[in-house]
Amino acid sequence: MNFDLPDDVTALRDGAREFAARELAPRAAKADEDETFVEEQWRAMADGGWLGVTIPEEFGGAGLGTLANSVVLIEFARACAASAVTLSVHAGLAAQALISQRLICSAAASLLRGPPASS
Picture 1 (tube, rainbow, N blue to C red):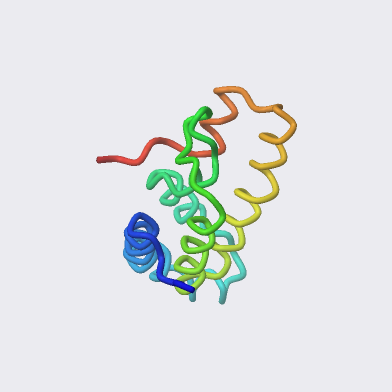
Picture 2 (picture 1 turned 90 degrees about the vertical axis):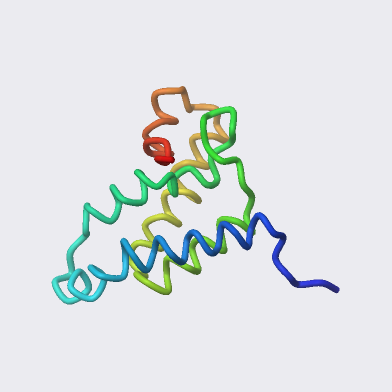
């Protein structure tokens, strides 16, 4: 059995690792110490397109599966557990509940996935 990640998921992992080291890790210890939510980190995840990993393409997300989402969450958790948990709840509970009930519209989809990633 082959447990290597597919090339696209490996690339996603590497991007998530780099993003987490640059955007999440520098603020994580202070946020934990102060017991605060760092809005800048959430905005950075949205700006980077990380909120839309599990959102179906028909709603403007990446439409990636559980493996891709898990890899992103692992990399984010290495840098900031709070950010990873927040993203997990967003992607797993909030977004998927709306999508499964078809309660999502294009305006709501843009809030769930955040702004498109900059090129």
